[in-house]
Length: 243
Image (tube, rainbow, N blue to C red; front, side, top):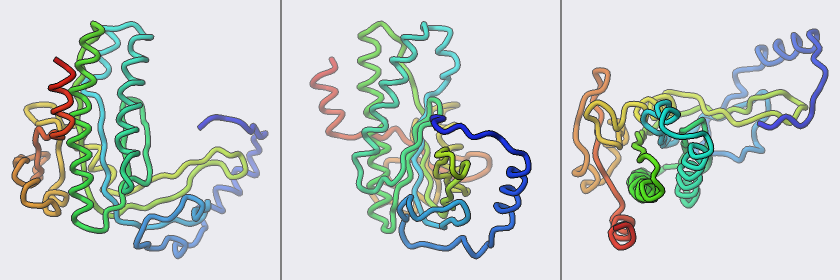
């Protein structure tokens, strides 16, 4: 959030704002069948919605600072973030995209099982994108990157948070589904796990073909599924253009 409207800090007004937020009625948080527009949010309400969350982050990104100068790292990060964002944004199911450091994640509206398959296909496209990016990086003499992609499906709370009147605000997504997808991405592509890691809930909503290309594994005592999945058309493009 860029700071554009500085307001003198008043401790009395701050204490009043805290009371207003904490005293807001719990009835202001309601269930929705679909993800509402951002404009529906105020600083006192929120909406429970069912979503699929998809995360992708770079494995070992902290080690990259030892191998490359900062301008090179900036270009590598920009290329990664730019194209992951472009790929997610191309889907009509994608309602929000967030960038946190070297992590890009999207919120997808998936009321039908076929929609979960569609987001799974985006995970495959992201994995294929990294193959193309790594070819480009290696051609420039830069290090390849590896990623972890995590995906979960469930209920989340959508709220607006920030400083009322300042223009500093954002939509916050709260709930186990977001935390779980992030955790899966942080574990994917590491310690023998394939780069795509999905929850049991996602697996149960996939069609037979997609279920057949991932494999059961345990993570923190829970059954999850992982695989090296890719997009066929993007792989063909890679074979034709990146050799």
